[in-house]
Image (cartoon, rainbow, N blue to C red; front, top):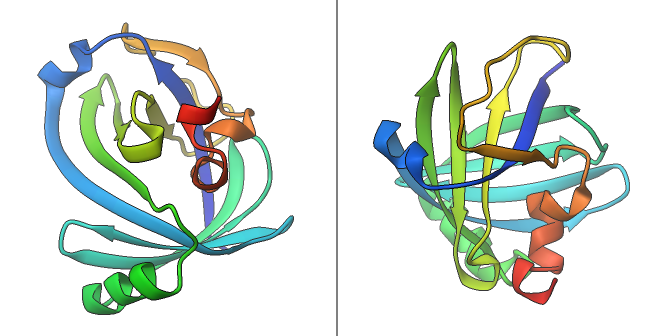
Length: 155
């Protein structure tokens, strides 16, 4: 069984940018979302992915992700995915013992910047970078599937 244990935080300032070691432009759209799961397609750079994630609140969720041809992913986003798409740039930042993913959203979600850290267990200790703010792991408004329906600009 695949699982994701991830904590999500708002970002206080841009000092994380000094530590970026990789970045990827992403476009993603949802094919369905129910009370049990969401199904999305993502294009990250020149790679395509199909992702199925349980629709549970909190830091632990079941997640399955599979590489698909980028041409197929683009076609699915253009023709089948719900609109608007989620557009963002993901920056990878190493801090202490973890790699943080900082998402800078664009389009209808412009102005929103969140950072996520994946953990091996729900109680795994980790050092918080100084640029991390409020934890929003349990707030569904910050889930990408919710941002697609209720963009940040409308809050």
